[in-house]
Image 1: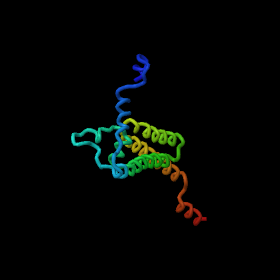
Image 2: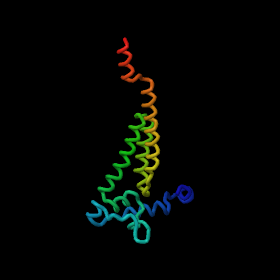
Image 3: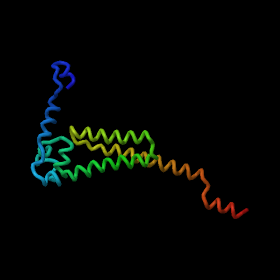
Image 4: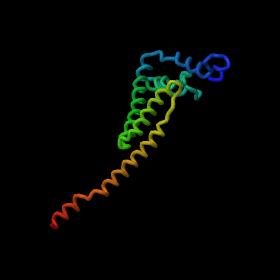
Length: 152
């Protein structure tokens, strides 16, 4: 796209033009808008309705209700990752930047990058458990403290 702009002065490419044309393919019924058609691929294995735009693929599959729950799920996963990290500010910026990028990427296609968030959630949970274990080992337990008081 940028090479073509440098050569011809036009900022366009076949991929961008095809994506822009896919945005013209919208659901034709209220039922599809609300609950979708529950189809992700057509009979030949291609994109249902010949649409590869992420938002529209989710809308054609599960309607606006499905799109809401899909985006809410990703946001909840990002938020949980942040909480499990011990509310580390760097993780906060990372997961919310990730969520923003998913929203941007879905303008072009449907990207299921949740496996990355699962990995970060696992690492954040592991880190939180190590911090809890380390803090509990430093603090004497109530049983030991009560036993010491009883001896006095």
